[in-house]
Image (cartoon, rainbow over all chains, first blue to last red):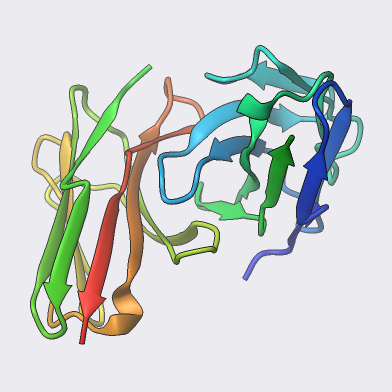
Length: 111
Length: 111
């Protein structure tokens, strides 16, 4: 099992707040990703990074930002949380054979 | 980017019955990956197929990659309650390392 950590695991926050979801991995993987997923539904790619100081937008990126200052760390920031952001956020990284390892996820509720 | 279509969306079987989920792409894929997500969990990598016509087995699970590398299937023989979850296929996104995931097939197995 891969070592990808996400904090917090659960978060309830009010509308308009700025939040940062943390993701870190200890495997030295260059390529990392953020997905948004409603329970049991498809995964939507939000952002990805292929290395330090490299970030790209996915399909649902317009309301969030990411940074990649260190290889092991890939935080996701929502500048102004809205109820439509209520979802699960999954972080992942790519292994040696191009497989993706996922973190446990952050379940976000915006009230 | 390339879209990966997956059917069926849901499948409910009795324990011991077989199960198959299908994945189709409109374009040729360099590889296809399969993931399993248990209820409340995160996706876990199962396998990657690379070669045209490739068939791989993992115990009761059989994975196939089509000759044209545009379709794939996952077949489970004699399902067990431990097989419950959502199975996703995923193909490369725009020839990069990021993936396009199918919408998944949710499998429910009743004893």
